[in-house]
Image (cartoon, rainbow, N blue to C red; front, side, top):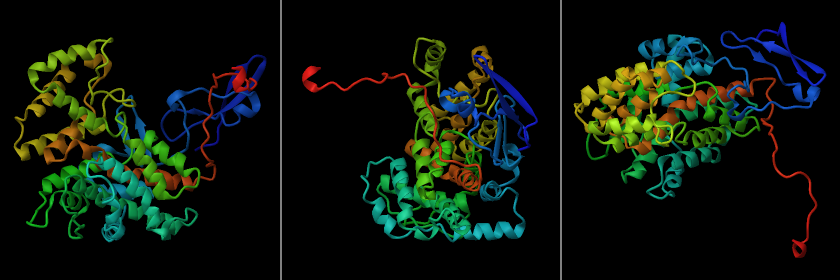
Length: 431
């Protein structure tokens, strides 16, 4: 970031405060308010931090008005069309696309770390069978610090590297184990001959009693889902990882915190909520009723999978995901499924109805990803775990960047206190 050459003047009563204005490579300028409290004895008030830059980052850039998403400067559309998930992982972690030799080395290291410590199997079996897979993932990832003591020193670059490789490699194994446990099937070990996405599908759907061959078209669709969810700037879960990491917590604890935050239906659970909504609607003839409800300001019902907190034009990931959805549905031969018919009709309405167009309520990535995962055979309870394993590389990249930032401090948001002023304690007999 360039040194500030401009300032903004803030006048409070008769005092004038100069606030430096900083500029990034692209995107809005920011006001540097770090000395505001010391100089003016005031805080800023920004619920949700929607107008606050909490860090400086070189990883991901979003322009919500234009509908742009860049990983290290590369448009997501180009990466989805020409790259693959592990190459994107390398890009996010290291800042540049790898050479052929670097890519082969990186893929080998990921592949060689996909197995889990055998005792973790007993840990997973300690959960109830009906536990949500996200509960299992939060617990298991947090417990990894009890099994991998040689990658906990956050001041050691090699420890950070090993922890990063381990989590990218092992999260699909953990997610698949959580799924297998929830359906009462035996765990399937990783298979080094398969690529990253195919290996995950194999661990989820193979059984020991018969051969399971992963369809390469489904593996490609899964790889694309992972790539599109790899990082998304300073969202709630990423900010949670950074906040946890600012205390010096070990990397496994930080990623577990991110998974816990992602679990919320307003964040990573949105694609599950979207598919559940489609099933609630049930049939195409009931769509007008739900459209009326969505337009009624007095009705609490919301159409899930439309619009986005950041993207005010369209979600660039949704365009790519729609292509995958069409491919997968055609491959699986389930275009006439009632839920999918509801989805297609809702999509048509959203792209043509003046209300949706004026509100910019376009189908987002959650709308299409849930449809794809459902067509592949995943239950809705697995949608968010798949999101979590996809986003792990983004969380780790952001965590590593934060650790290396010399200006990094432990996170400590302030508050506007509106409770009781100081008062004296009254003995219980006089209340």
